Length: 374
Ligand SMILES: [Fe+2]
Ligand SMILES: [Fe+2]
Image (cartoon, rainbow, N blue to C red):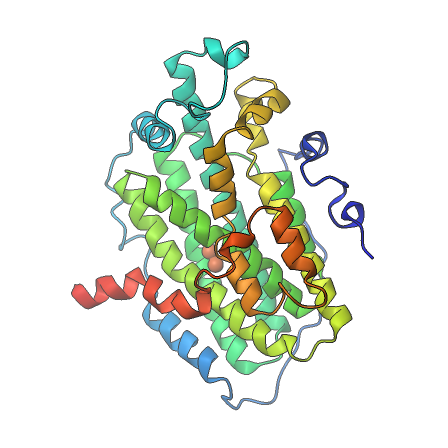
C-alpha cells in the first residue's frame, strides 16, 4: 500500500511545517523544462464514433470568443477599492474574520493600509497563479492532441488548446494593465503540473488537468466571480468559466469510456493520483508567498488563517466540482472506497451529490447566451 509519505512527501496532510518547506527556489527562472516521455499517436481510424465528443466539439467551435474585442478593457480598476470590497464581502473587516483572536499577534498593530495592501497582494497572487495554471492547461492539452488515440478527442482537444491560449492571454493582460505586480509560480502548483506533464499515460493528463486542476479552477473562478465587484474581472471570469466547463466535461466523457477498460490495480493508481493532486492544490491555496511578501512570520499567519471557519469553507468549496466528477467516473467508490475515505479526511465529501460537470456544462455557457441576446 502506498503511504501518504510516498504520495505527498509527508505523513500528516495538515503538517504546516512540511507544506511551507516547499517553495519556489528559482524565482528568476524564465524557461522551465519538463521531460515528457509520452508517445505521440496517429490514428488511421477517422470515423466519427463518439457522439458526445462531437457535440462538445461543435459547441466549442461556436462558443469561441475574442479576448481583445469581447471584453471592455477601457474599464479602469482601482485595485485598493477592489481589495477593500473583497475584504468586506468576506468577513466584514479583515481577512481573518471576527472569530480569530488577533490580540498579541503582529496583526493587532496593522493599519488599514496594511490590510488593504494584503488584499492587493492576494489579488496579484491569485491572478498570477491562475495565469500559470492556464499555461499548464495549454501545454497539457497540446499534449493530449498528440497522445489520445481517438480522432474525436484530438479534434476537441485542439479547440481547447485555443481556449487555453486565450485564458493565458486574458490573465496576463489583466495582471499587466489592471493590477500591480506578478508572482512566480507557487511550488506546489508547479510540482503538480510537472507531474501531470511528465506522466506518460495519456489518461493521467486528463485526470490531472481536466478533472483536478480545471475542476478546481472552475470552482475558484466561480467563487471569485461571485465575490468581485469589478465588472471587467467579473465578465472575464464568466467567459473563462464557460470554456472551463467544457474542458472538465471533456475529461469526464473521455475517462468514463477509458476507465471501463482498466483493472482494479490501475484504478487504484488513478485514485492515488487524484488524491495527490487534491493535496497539492490545497497546499497552494495557503498563499505562502503573500505572507512572505507582507514581511510577517508565515507559519504564524497561516496558523491564524486556518482557524477561520470562513477560510475552511472557501477551501472546501474549491472541491465542489472535483468530488461529483470523481464520483461519476467511479473513482470515489472503486476498490474499497479508498478515495471516498481520503476526500472525507479532506472534509470535502459533502459535495459528492452536487451536479457533475458533464451534466451542467451547457448551462454554464455565458458566451452562447450573450450571442443569443446580441
Ligand atoms: Fe483555462
Ligand atoms: Fe481549461
